[in-house]
Every structure is written in C-alpha cells, then in structure tokens.
Image (cartoon, helix red, strand yellow):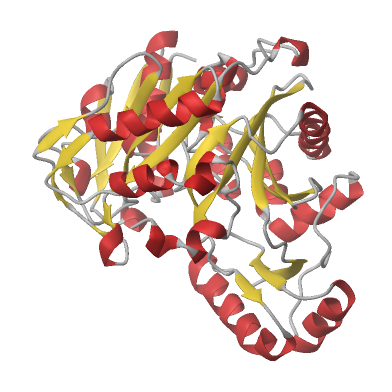
Amino acid sequence: MKKVLIVNRGEIAVRIIRACRDLGIKTVAVYSEADASAMHVNQADEAYCIGPAAAAKSYLNVTALLTVAGHAHADAIHPGYGFLAENADFAEACRNAGFIFVGPSAEAIRRMGDKAQARAAMIDAAVPVVPGTKDLIRYVNECEEVAAQIGYPILIKATAGGGGRGMRVVPNRQKMKKALQEAMQEAKMSFGNGGVYLEKYLTHARHVEIQIMADSHGHVVALGERDCSTQRRHQKVIEEAPSSFVDEKMRAAMSTAAVAAAKAVQYCGAGTVEFIVDEYKNFYFMEMNTRIQVEHGVTELVTGTDLVKTQLRIADGEALPWKQEDIHIRGWAIECRINAEDPQHQFMPSPGKITVYEPPQGEGVRVDSCISAGSEITPFYDSMVAKVLVKAPDRKQAIQKMLQALEDFRIEGIKTNIDLHWNILSGQIFQQGKMDTSYLEEHLQEYI
C-alpha cells in the first residue's frame, strides 16, 4: 500500500493523513466546493474537488470518488466514519474496482449494519441481547403482544442507520401506535428503510462498548471498554476509558462476547461492539459499528496503541501486531466532542469564521481537530470541529485535567459547547460515575 484515498473530511481525514504519513504512505484528499480551504485539503499530498457543497453531490458521490481513486493511482480507500464508512455497496464497489477497502467485507457490513440481522446473528452466536424481537415488526398488535410479554417501557429501533433516528421510547400501550408510525416514517426518510424491531427499554442503563480489531488471518483482539453513557438525544457527548462501572470480571465477559460477535461474521478491521448495561451489571448487545469510531482516541491513550495505523496495516494483509495478553489498560482517558453549536439556543448550529483558535496544551492533553484561526465553519456538515482528549493516572485526575483543558481552550467567532462540557464534568453526578444514558437529557437545563 503506497497511496490511500481518504473519502472523508474534517478531523477524521486529518487523523488518517497523520497515520499515513507516519507509515510512509501518500495521501489523496477529496473535497467539496465548500471545503476548498479545509485543513485536510492542505495536509494531503494530493487533493481533488468532487462537487458542490451538498454531500450527496460530493462526499457521497461514489462515481466521482472512484474516478479520483483511479486518476490518482491510489492503492486503497479509507472511508473514515460517517458518510460511506458503513455502506456495504460502496465497500463492494471499491473492491470490484480493484482498490483495497480499509474496513471489513461488504458481507460483514451488511450483516452487522442491519440491526435486526445483527441481533439475530448474535442470538445464534450466544451473545446476550436485550429481550425483544428477533425479526422486524410491522403491526401495532404485534408490538402490543411483545410488550405484554417483556413489559413496558419498550424501545422501537430502526434496523438501518443510527444516531437516534427511527427510535422511540414507548412508556405504555396507549402510546404504541403513534410511536410505531413515527419511527417507521422517520427511518424511511432517514435511511430509505422503514424496518423497525422492538427491545425492552432499560431504565438507568449505561452504554458501554468494546473496541475490537481483527485481521484477515482469523485473529481478533479486544482492547477494553469505553463508557459512552453521557448522551443527548441518543448522541454521545463525553466518552471515557475505562468505565468506572466495569470490573475485571465484567470486562473479561464483555470482551469475550465482543470477540465472539466479530468471529460470528468473519470480521476484519477495526470495529466496536456496543452494549447496553443495566444497573445490575447485566450487559446486552445493541449493535456493531463496522468502522473506526469518533471516540477511538481514548482507547489509544489507555492501551498505547494506534488504531488507525493498525487499520491500514491489516487492510494491507498484515497480521495483528498484538495478542490478547499484550493488551493492558493503564490510566484513564476522557474525550469531549467540541461542536459548533449554541446550547443556550436549542443547540442551533453556529457556522462562521474562526477568529481565535488556541487549543489546550500540556502533558496528557491531545486535540484532534480540523480547524485553525481563519477556518470557515460551513452549515453543510456535522458540527464537530475538534475533540479534546486527556489522559491521567486515574479518573479523578483525568477529570481535573479535562476541566483545565476546557478552561484553556479558546475558540472565538462561533458558539461552541465547551462550557456545557465543563459544567457536566464539574457536576456531582459525572464525578461520582453515576451518569446513565438518560440522565443528561432529563437534567439538561441544569448544565446549560
């Protein structure tokens, strides 16, 4: 592998460029007209405009992307996260065109990308799943029958996509019909697939995920857990590794389940097996993300690994550089997602020109970013502009280090959620490790 086309933008494109540079691999960037002066464009060895601002006409334009790959004589294509990263048809098209796809097979993406199929596969592999339906469900009476068996509240989930779309919590029988219709319609509009299934909705639950890496030689390694329970509208806000709720016995059991999940679909590459965990430490499979995650950096910090470099090496046919016994968790890491948004006004996007950009620095502080002073934040894409990561010997020190990093972070010209992060981290609930997936949403006004 000598040259990689990165079919993404923002901080993940910059992150991949850095990994490629360390490995001596040339990089090719693509950009929309709105991203002509973006950081990833300037840092890559080559860059090509692929269309107007609209993602459908640029970053999602498969024909244009493959044309650039051929023109630039790229060996491989890295999708990053978002956009086409979990699109099985794109993975297949890349390989059919003769390019290495830095990710799992199209078959694995299809099987794990359809949440109902993934759930069925996990049941067959004896991986614990939340009580609910194995197959898709279409009618209100079916929903009511399942709910009567497993009890309310019920969670309706879209089989395709993610990000909380096509998802509804149903507290009782009277709300079922409306919730089912809304979930199916939203799923159809968002993903072109209105299929939904049901799960028992766990209250006071935590979102804990296991990072795995698998090679093409049949080896799979788990790299510990991340706690992503601090969420708003089913979207992750703060992530940490390890989890204050997970003990050694639980970590071993979750890791074993995650490895079994990967092996069940003959997985190859970086992936994340996401679990929902109840207050009694019972864990259940939710879904598998068949790509590198936004929050991969906290795992890198506590395990001393480089997941993006490893992705590239595995895609090039190399075996995993470590065995399970080589993975040790040392210290504590926290990540805050810095978005161009205004929490005080319903989290409205805040596009504009960055007039001041002074990221925090110091030992144990890492900032993955795609902006600098003078950068223009456009309204066309995801609002995340940077990730602040810290590492310290323990959780208490990591929280204090992050609070200081957020105080030191100056971004002017746009609104950001930096103050929201500071308020959450300084709050008693987070500091005591008691944050569950619904707490922030229910108490949001206390932090704004």
